Length: 183
Image (cartoon, rainbow, N blue to C red):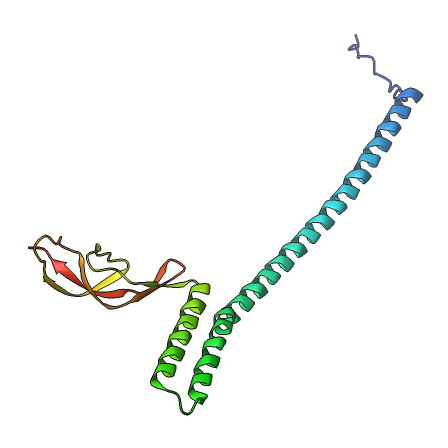
């Protein structure tokens, strides 16, 4: 007896895709290619927008740096402009050869008023504490301490030796004062 052999499978031809399936695959491929082209176009637009934004930021930064540089360079321009009339007044006063002491004093007082006005326009104001007012270490500098009189509180201003000045609420020079000492 001969061994039984299994029947050999004969290769069957592969099923050809139906025309409907080919059409769907082609349609899907076309849609994917169209979507890819759309995404590439959007990517290009976004890249261009990004580059423009970067250029705008760099231009803004450069302009800001130029403005800061100019502000530093010409910061004293307004102050110098305010001082020019004071210089003119002093020169005019010195130009008078035979002025009386009263005229010299009057001219000096007028020039001082001009100078104070120019300083105030540039936010420079004086610190001139009154005797008896409270000592403020942020605005005053105690030069000496004297024993307090009867009825006088400790750490109050007894006398002002030199006025101080503020510039825009910042101490330019503290007022020099004598302060009463605690008992």
